[in-house]
Image (cartoon, rainbow, N blue to C red):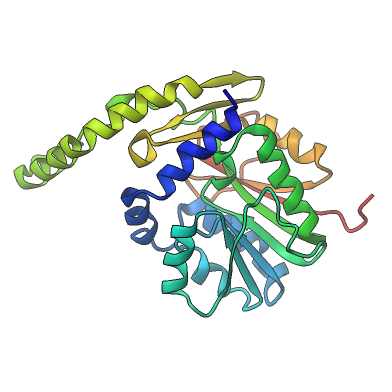
Length: 274
């Protein structure tokens, strides 16, 4: 079994589902406090300059980043989400493109390159490296790269099937609605949970496992804080800051781990590139 192709098939199916459409169009604004803090970290140095928004989906990040610069380009590899984004923001430069090959975009051009909402985790590890290399290539010397990644040390890793069960409420109407939604989701969630378990892998510093999102319909990379720091250094990038998903506080440079659900990494492309 080719793991990369299997992940592509599973995750592309999820992005084309009704559940993805509902989530991507009904979650406006920042994904979490850490994302907001990370974008604010880079804002003063990128305002008014070229921005590339990778994995734009249905357009959640469009108003957030066009507030920084009108010199804005967005890409995604799922046609259905591109079409949704075009309907909502017909004026932006929006392109169908796979982040593993952005050869249609110029090298050393963008002041700020972002891949949000852990989108980089939805391919296998080798392809994840290709995406980071492409992000570095299109970023100008001195420019900034921001991406988020699921944390293997956080509560989202290996979420149990019980995650789908309804949250109790003393309000009978609310509890009834939650129970109905759970019963409606249960068959597809159970199938996905069992079917995607075959793709689980554990490696030094990272793992591949099913996530509860989209009815356990995606299989993603979970990495550790220490491993991602090493990876960024190996790519020849300078790590500037890391923020967790649970608050707006920067994670200390000497922290060995984090219990955040996911992590936001801000890296700089050196002024002088070897």
